[in-house]
Length: 94
Image (cartoon, rainbow, N blue to C red; front, side, top):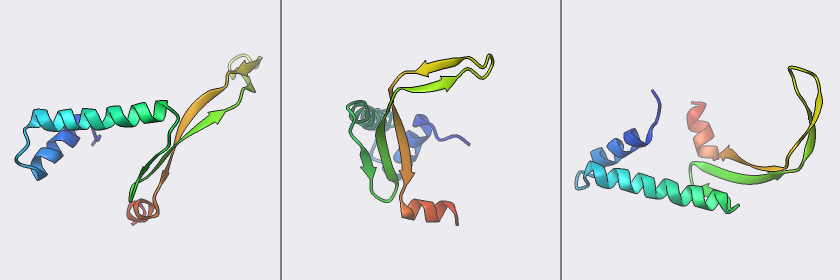
């Protein structure tokens, strides 16, 4: 089963019965907007007990088209990587 924004909102409503589903959806959307904006700005995101999202700058590099074998130049870009916390890693691995 996939974890979706709607399912996160449902879980929030289950544990916080004083909230409406719409309020929970708004909180999830607000949280995700904050996270997206910070990552876009190049800031790393640390969630204790969960992990760290790291923004890395990749330099321009040479690549190859796998279909034609032609060499090409890949543009520099930013990527987001995730490193789980030790606690999360232990829980996932049992």
